[in-house]
Image 1: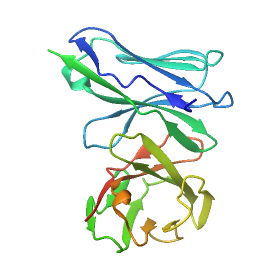
Image 2: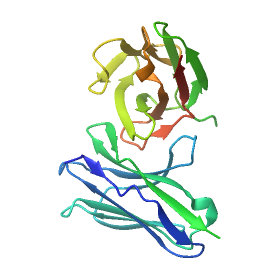
Image 3: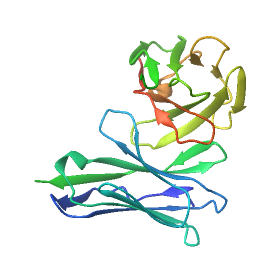
Length: 109
Length: 112
């Protein structure tokens, strides 16, 4: 089992819709969870961090964490074409980050 | 407020040469991490350093790769005797203790 798993996509949504991105992880001792956005040819950009069960909202983004199910998700409301990118889920292993391969999101106008 | 600075942005080397990648962390960040992103692969952790100390090098290949973060100056990732398989994007990230990591723009290494 891979340490961090994401559907590779592409996930296609129309402009204005909600995009839902999912991630599962295998290490039960992980305590910190992150979502990064990476545009093609660019560096990963931190968009959300979450450390406790439940929801965390920041603007159009909501991260959800369920440690019992070892599941993290990211919701993007009112999706815009500029949200088209690869979204990377990352989980801590001690101080290192373990990344999933990413989900490619395409928002059509 | 400058972010994580990496140079060079692009580096071309011939097989057998050495590659040196530099990373200056964000101001106030004492922790530096190196990651490698191969084509069609995810980001892979390589090494975590603090000033003058390697804390975790569990992701570093056993041979040809080394990293340092001296008391003065940037962190250096060094690859000796490069091979075609070393072609990748190398990203540096930095953070304060127990805070999220922020990434630099990366160095794209191409091996001829």
